[in-house]
Length: 96
Image (cartoon, rainbow, N blue to C red; front, side, top):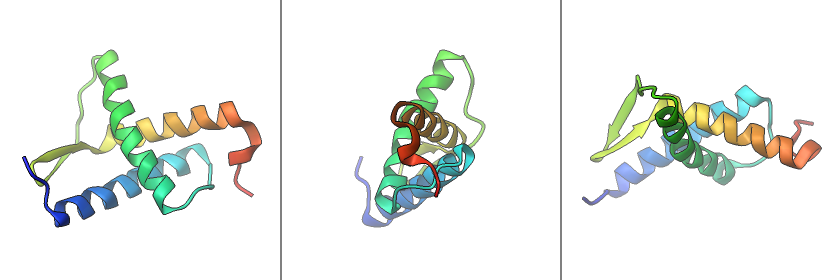
């Protein structure tokens, strides 16, 4: 399955939004666009894994270019990942 440039850009934007919401839920403001996109993709990996362990389903899947993106669990996964980073690194990620 191939992903078009448009599909990739849309996935990057969705990951950025999910990562931003995850950061906002935790209350951490550091990191730019690349960091936020990375958090969105890490959340997209961590969130569904966590949901699978808890036997929960994804209520809102977004299909872009034949690829499914779990919106809700990506946001939750991003928030969990950012919270873990904050706990491990301490004050370095705190909003000024």
